[in-house]
Figure 1 (cartoon, rainbow over the protein chains, first blue to last red):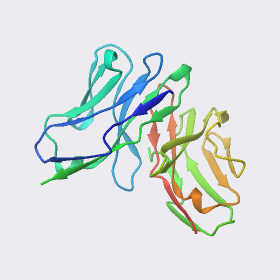
Figure 2 (figure 1 turned 90 degrees about the horizontal axis):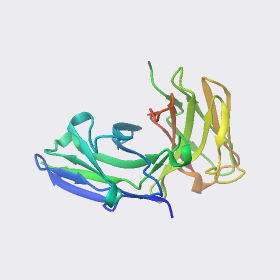
Figure 3 (figure 1 turned 180 degrees about the horizontal axis):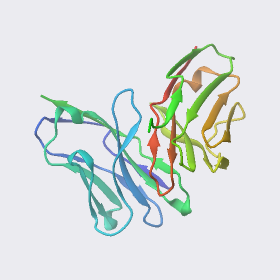
Figure 4 (figure 1 turned 120 degrees about the vertical axis):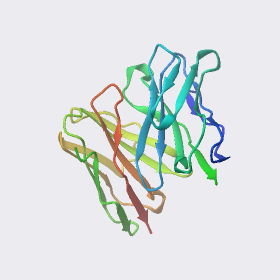
Length: 114
Length: 112
């Protein structure tokens, strides 16, 4: 079945530590790929997106993501997290069969230890 | 630009009542999306419009849900009658195309 999977429901890291959030998708063709962040009580904000070209994508707030076609993955990384990065992170795919809609993963909740 | 504006921010209603959620998209955005977020099911697309026309409503749970977009600056999502399982956060988003989504802050609906 077509899906977007975020294997980690909850991750805790220490402030200053590096971060990697995983995302895998299962679609026949390479979809457009996105990462969004949601702070408590807020809507979703786009961190970065991949359509084509360079497989390492830079986003806002110091985040980057790498597309790996062989692994059907689009993992989100940050070299050093800040307490303000605590939030829920969503991976999403779009462009399936040419449609404008996004399909979201279940999300990963990130907690930062001081 | 004020962004995507949703109202109300919070809604508490009794089972069986009609609920109407409202959304004002960003001016110039041709696409409007309604999503529902719950702990169990995550973010689900309910319906989306292009130039005020519904394109995909396959995510609408059942006939109790209906959505309209009478003009480019306004959309409603209506639930009639409401049930406790409809309790969720409902998000509206708009986009100019090319997946440039902007989300509203959501409406938290509680049906008791």
